[in-house]
Length: 91
Image (cartoon, rainbow, N blue to C red; front, side, top):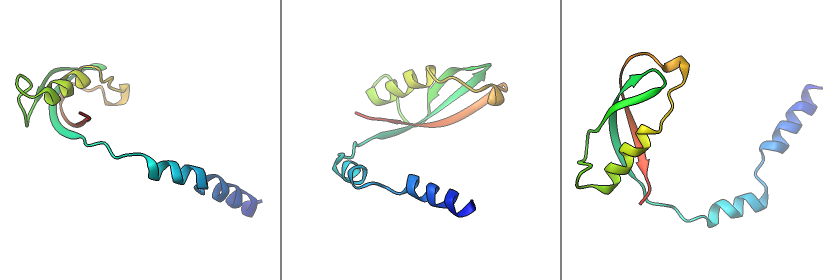
């Protein structure tokens, strides 16, 4: 029984030829990373600021602020405090 479970797991996790080719053909997107600091307020992030760029002059930093405003905080992490997150923004 254990061997059949291991064999099934190996078969499921083994990459197929089609998926391997598809991942090789996908072009890599350049992303810019921004550090955003926010207050955790229940299930939402508030008072977010970009640490390493100016959102007024950098459109990627402005997008990072918009992304942070839409993040839902899980109940297990919804304790009041500050959090810093790294957001990758595609151009």
